[in-house]
Image 1: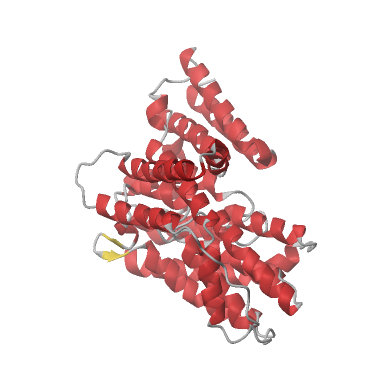
Image 2 (image 1 turned 90 degrees about the horizontal axis):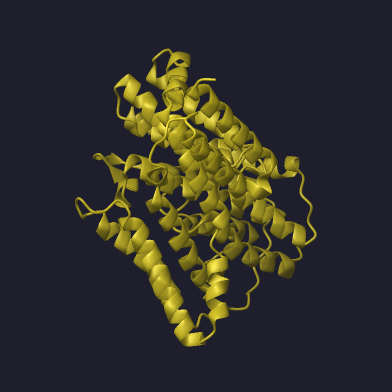
Length: 427
């Protein structure tokens, strides 16, 4: 069996296992990567620099940001901000929409799941006081956090992956190559979805009663989170910096937060609790996938997949762009978008190289399709699963049909807006 066929079979088996055995995805990816390395040592596959295949900047950014976010949530600052927003809303309809928008804004800088865990309790509090169902509000918070996660470099794992592949810095998510970047596309999409949410929640005209005010006693985690953003911006102006600069920034500020917390509490268990909040499953999954993708890239599989897209699109950029966006929506509706985006980014790079074009339009199309497509179904994104878990604990079992009554119009509005804007700006 030739090396290319063997590598492709191993990768496909891995992907199927990732879909079926979702609770052990990290172990599957790492195990497959180890098999890949072993096959390289025995000569069945070509060897390459396995360690260098892992994007350590991405891994460190994810770990560091998650650690700081854990401290930020613990400080109760998100809940205080939500209280402030609710004070300004005239009724439940606007409170639900405002919470969804607030979740989106937070999610542009904080992990999507963490955002849901921050904002959902506020929605539950409102629902209990007014004796209404929290289902619609929690769904809106989850899908809104998914939408805005694509807006900045640190908003979502998929954005961090794009930044690594395209070598984009924090500011380039706002303005790139002299044009409006993905941030503005996402924000205009978010504005368009407000009208969908207002229509969906049109019957909730109950006045909002005053809620118990959240008290924040520690503002240092907020300083750390803002510090990450500011330092990433400043780092973007440094030329010829090390490839893992952003990763060091995020890890460094997390360590500062951990040291300070230990000094204040003198309890090592508080450090362990913060470190537990880091999503090691995602980190392990990505590390394994980086090795696997490096392997199939080495044997030429990535180039072959890229060539298939070019052939299907008849070498027409608009057709290829359309295929990437809407195939990504369909695929991300049923599988997690992290392994999908990690796989497709080098494919997109290969497509652009074969066509002799700048890959930006295809990168952004992939990000919009894959990140927003996960909103369609309850299992399409981790934030959706987290939201449903919160509802389940409150005794609300939700069917896919009920979820999709909100998610489908919301997602299609956001994707269509992004699809049109990216083409108009970048074609």
